[in-house]
Image 1: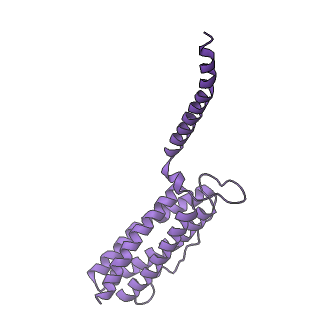
Image 2: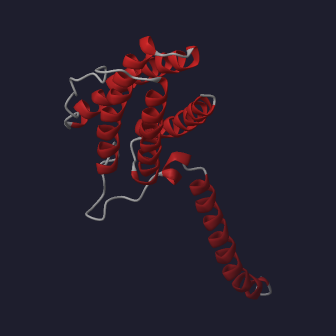
Image 3: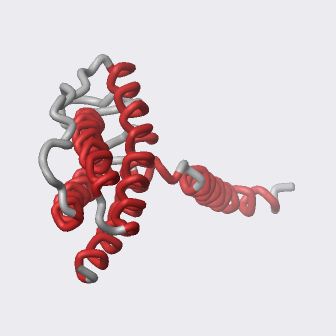
Length: 187
């Protein structure tokens, strides 16, 4: 039995090393399965941990998008019945139909967060003649602003639904910019 003791003493450090390696592998494996949106999440505010539900970037994004969406809906609703082109009319109707419900969703988020929604602009955007070209150029500018705002949300926001909206904004608005640019080129 004494012959086995030196071997047992040499095995103890090896067991400790194996245990440490296994513990490290388990920790790495557990962390690698973390939720992907956590990896996408922006850093927390320097003043302390942010509310896990939303942060200042989310509020700024949503407030700005509510204002932009309202403007876009008003412009689209004014342009649709006056459109010279069937393609412009269809685009205007699609924009009004898609962005209107988003306003309700985003104002709901703001209400839940105890934040104010931007004041409604009552002019409706419908005064005066609105040519297809004026509608398209105005909407391209609004869409580019929306894409920029969405990029800021994706870089800094933490509210998962707002981030999902931002991703959708980038995708849809970029496609619509291409569509509107093509319509302008066809003038």
